Image (cartoon, rainbow, N blue to C red; front, side, top):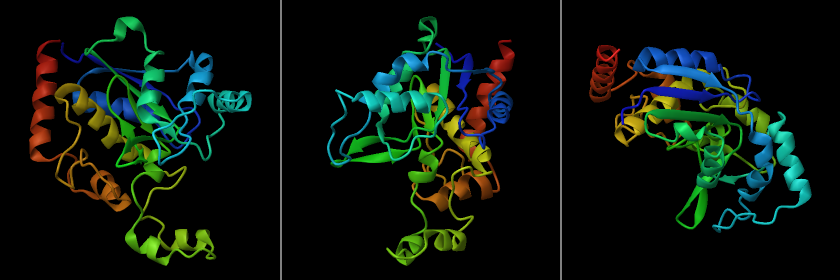
Amino acid sequence: MKLSSIHLYNNKTDTSLKISLLLQYIKEKTGLEVDLREITEERVLAEEFARAKVIDPHREELNPNPLKAEIEYEYKIISGQKPSGLLYDGFCLQEIYRQILPRKEHNLAQGHIIFTTRLFGTFSDNRYHARVAVFGHPTIISTTGIVVSPAKPREFYLRKQPREDPTILANEFRGRFIEYDDKRLTEIMKGYVMQAFFYQVFGNPFCSDPNCRLYNAHWQEEVINAQLKSKYEFCQLHYQALTSLKHQQFCTQ
């Protein structure tokens, strides 16, 4: 079944993310129908969000019996409070959000991309690793993950001292990594929504070219290079694939 439309779900708590610009960008690049939706049934899933919380990052163990206070905290997050100090299992979070999707849209013709401030990770090599995105149905993208997951420059960690004022160090390296409420966030997220698109169409969201928006960056400076500094958006291979898909889309309209 061919992808026919993409649905974006807004993250209202991160004002630096201009979701309307992402919507227009996807339309221009893919030729698909794209709409913006609000997540209206999230409150009923507060307890499930609490269950998806990682208890120990070094063990694949979640939170099957959350306390009342933990559930109440999830209500606060849903109401607009930014989560702090929590890590969720990415695949569990994806499954929770899947419950919100209309049943008639549980098919490959519909692409769903959900932005969240929740930080999530996946378990491998005996520990959880923070992620920016988990691709699938739906794709979930963390605006906190883009700050936390890709590593800062090596020199930052070498210079970091227990008693040193972190603000001074951050100012010295400003511009070399993504920060909270970063004005560059929307431009950076263009690459991640296109990764979600390529995953939906081809099953592979990534590219080995460090200058392509689809590059699977593990360092902050790699993110900045691929999404902000590169002289081109897509490598020749992915540019041609995108052009061909867009042409096919227009021919069927």
